[in-house]
Length: 321
Image (cartoon, rainbow, N blue to C red; front, side, top):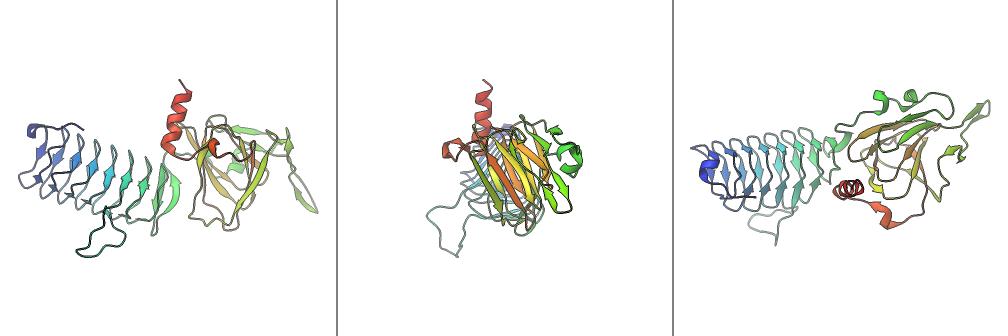
């Protein structure tokens, strides 16, 4: 971050900006106060009655609406929007006149938006592109592009993630013919109608390599007992292929190749989702009794996982070179 001259920034006559580390084009409005140690990027808009403490870093093109306070330990990426009276905290057990050895670091990555009166607990990372609804209380890390509402905050969707086929039901998007397939437009991911048989005794969906399963599985596991507000997955595999089926109930799956994203609602055991390597996968919105069955092409290998979204984007970029 470069140091700008006073001529490069605007400070209202009733505003106070003590920091010399403020980017060109930033505006500080009336009754706002920026302490000397704060580092502010370029083209930011710091509205009335904003307070920014010393150990704070703010990226470029950030908007801080009226009544926001950024306490020591807050880190905002580029193009972050903070709505009126949104509240940040930096101490889990605050006591008057008692200070911790260091304040917890709270990170909002690039392009995050926070609605009015939301509260963000300390030590949390909010992933890039996430949307925090007005009044939400954020008590845990937020995945990239997630939309969060409520107290405590829960995920209700993902930003810029259309439902497959622009339909609310994957079953409706996939023809009833066995073997019918719909390409999701996300790095070789697709959904397919599986072999299935129904008679007076009930229904059967057999799976075998080449007939329903696109590979010979080395591992099969089930995910169940997941509360509706919790999220599973949030990782990519370097080599492992996966095939997902809602064995009971329903679950939403987000697939993301770093450029394109789709959301699939698995709700029929005759429909399977192929999750290719180097695709970020997220499972959420589980039914109370939902059971997700996953077949994997490889045995468990810790080194095959990419668990950080920024690392995933870097790996995708490197693979394109």
